[in-house]
Image 1 (spheres, rainbow, N blue to C red):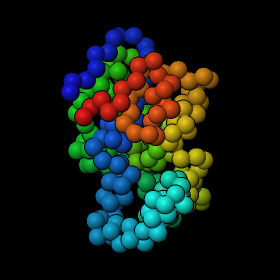
Image 2 (cartoon, rainbow, N blue to C red):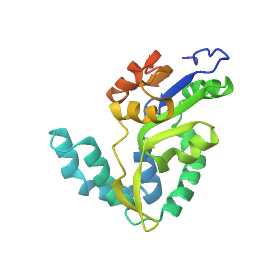
Image 3 (tube, one colour):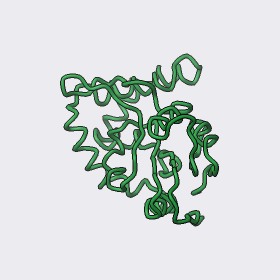
Length: 203
């Protein structure tokens, strides 16, 4: 599939990250990358009760994410996470990105549009990559205390309606996007706020 044609005019454009611009979940890939497959597998086993609870509707999506973050990054210095984000952007992100999606994002940037990557993944996962691509990142914020990650969310998980609420910090109320790209139920509200919505456009 070829990237949509972009007219050279200023637009507000939002891309979901995981599944839309990438082929895999970036948080999962980041956590495996930083500790290795063996350690990641052992840590994931300890998280099984949370996964089962989520499947049964007893644990929220944010609850599962917070439990995983506590296992993987609690007490890691924020400075370390920043450096690892830069390494991840260079070493891993290129192989996760869908070529057509990346081409569409860069076409919007080249056209002078205001481009947002709006994702439920934590900021540290894609901060360095979005900075390199010259786009705004709206992501799940994590709590930092004493210069270290606590493993807790700072605010709401950036999923569903929270994506639109976070966009309102930049665009005001009501949020009106010119173009939005998404691939899941978590993008439904963001797509509904766009004049032109693309669902699973790069597959």
